[in-house]
Amino acid sequence: MATGTAPPKNDLLLLASLFLWEVAIAAMAMAMYMKGDRSFTVFLSSSPGLVFLLAITVFFIAGAVVIHQYQGCKRSPSRHFHLIVTMNLVTALLILITGEIAMRMLARTTVEGETLGSRVLIPKNWGELTRHNRQLLDEANTRPTFSVYDDLMGWTVGPSRRSANGLYYSSSEGIRAPHEDVSFAELTEKTRIALVGDSYTFGEDVAYEDTWGFLLENALGSEIQVLNFGVPGYGVDQAYLRYEKDVRKWKPKVVIFSFIAHDVERTMTVYTSLNYPGWNMPFSKPRFILRDGDLKKLNVPPLAPEAIFSRGSISELPFLEYDRGYRQSDWRRSFFQFSYLARAFMTWLPRWEAVTPDVSDEALVSVNASILRAFVRSAEEAGATPIVVYHPKREFNTSSSSYVPLGKRVLQEAGLVYTDPTSCLLELDQADWFIPHGHYTPKGNAMVAKCLVKAVRQVLGEVS
Image 1 (cartoon, rainbow, N blue to C red):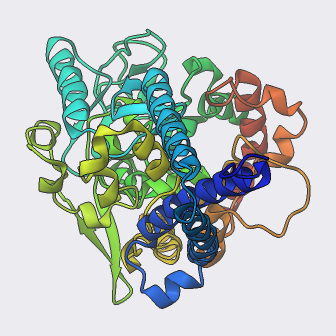
Image 2 (image 1 turned 180 degrees about the vertical axis):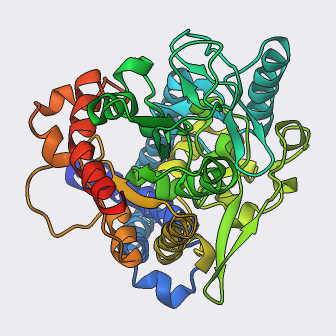
């Protein structure tokens, strides 16, 4: 072997050490970013903290090997060490450039900014979100929309409306109706049953005649009138407020309050467009918090859509700290925003932020439970019999599990008896429960109605 020629195994050791050194530096940087607001002591006991400690160890071991190789190079006239280092740096740079190009080619512009797959890259783009929602508002000014601003709930079903797809109609009172020019206000001797809730109550994706509310009315007989006050997108809080504002005055004999697990999450939000931009609903909503055991409303009246999207920055919006879906770091613009590769890593490995008590899981359970109890009290005080219905989620699993979803944790905390239509839905194949990417199928609605008929008849027998 010629003098000054490094053995191949030393070349491989140097290359591996340089690679590990660079990976360790990147891992330490990402771990420190993920540290966020945590103290260093708490951080070190977390998963990113353990990665940080491992990266430091690798950094020093690999660094020692590189320094040792460098010292050996100084005693030799060969420039072999410098060539290997240069090759490593060029390779690393090419990998970074290729990764950056790939990220930019794969990224797509959406309402919130650039996305990779289903993930929105941080920082999100307030300007893009504003432009999209202003366009929705401009379109709303040229034609009546089915959902309209409401000074208590944030939005509601507009009176005497027809949806753009021609599937939904509302009465002159803003109640779902079978066709145009309907009013339910005339006096009637029929026993009234009112439904309050979200899109599952409203019967989204199906015709009026296929909703479980209509099918329930048919099954109960000609002496019963079912009024559907459901509103798509509602949380538990808005359904309760809809009852207080619009339903109670109808003096129904029975009030069915139905919700899905996701509705308890919606209760903890303020700005629908920030949390669910794909819904194309440019509204804000009220937010309940608990203070000394009592429910307190914030953002009432809710900020009107025009006022939301006239703000130059998202930080100008009020009550953001009470919105469970808002993370300040998701919108903070920083020097790294020029790199899509860095943005991807920081999106997939987010910075830790302290959760304030008002947006914690504990608050979610206690606030929603308090709202449900408030609804039951209010309905009983008005002389109505309340029925609470909890709809199964789309990913329902019949296998036993110790995990209790947040929706059922809320019901346990509230201490309420509730109706779960799962037993009736199980008479169908699960593929027939839901429209793909949607709500109950006509068959699914029929099974829900079937389960509720017995519960309502029992209640009517007790109160008649």
